[in-house]
Image 1 (cartoon, rainbow, N blue to C red):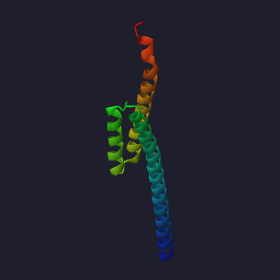
Image 2 (image 1 turned 90 degrees about the vertical axis):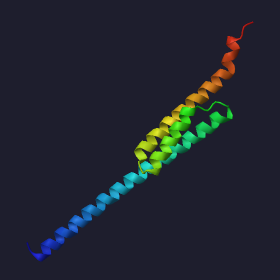
Image 3 (image 1 turned 180 degrees about the horizontal axis):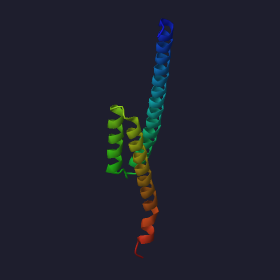
Image 4 (image 1 turned 90 degrees about the horizontal axis):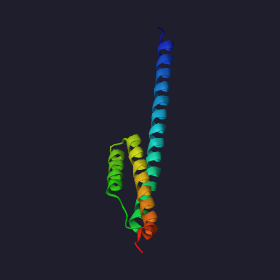
Length: 109
């Protein structure tokens, strides 16, 4: 193989590797952004539930799991746990608001 071909091949390999790394970096950044958005929404819903005195312990557990996964760099797992935490927090909000009026239907007259 000629020296020029060898240099061209090496240059092509370096270029492909650089592009692959850039793609991986972009994907990781997107996963991290997804986690951050999901986590913020979950924390907000959990705080709202706290204002109604109806926070669920499983929500706090899911938030802790999300934070732990994010700290370890596993943003896909972290985003999944954060979305689960948000769903739990919203369910606790639903429970709190529905029970504010549901007890009246149960009251014995």
